[in-house]
Amino acid sequence: MDINDRRATKYARSCFIKRGIDLQMADVRVQHGVCFVRGCIQAAAKVSMKSVEHEAYLVTQIIRRSPDIKECVLECTYKEQWFN
Image (cartoon, helix red, strand yellow):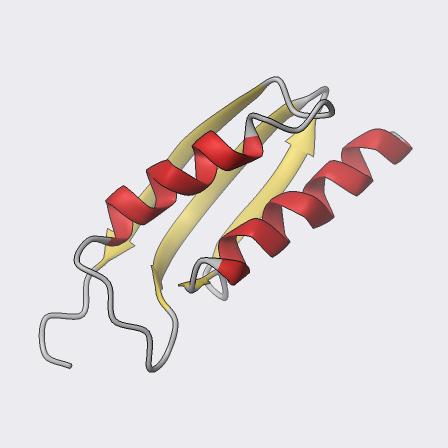
């Protein structure tokens, strides 16, 4: 794995965690400058958000600003918490 891809993977994971998205059932990888998010993502415990899908989209916009990441692909399902 390239050192830039490793650094970008850590950056992408931290961006998701800062926005309150739980990645326990998901895999986040950066390969050749493209960030892939696979699996199931959900809101972290005690975090209220209207839509996990919308938050993930906002995080991808933040991630794309990084010089190490060219594109972000969301190949995941979203688990909504209806009863908080």
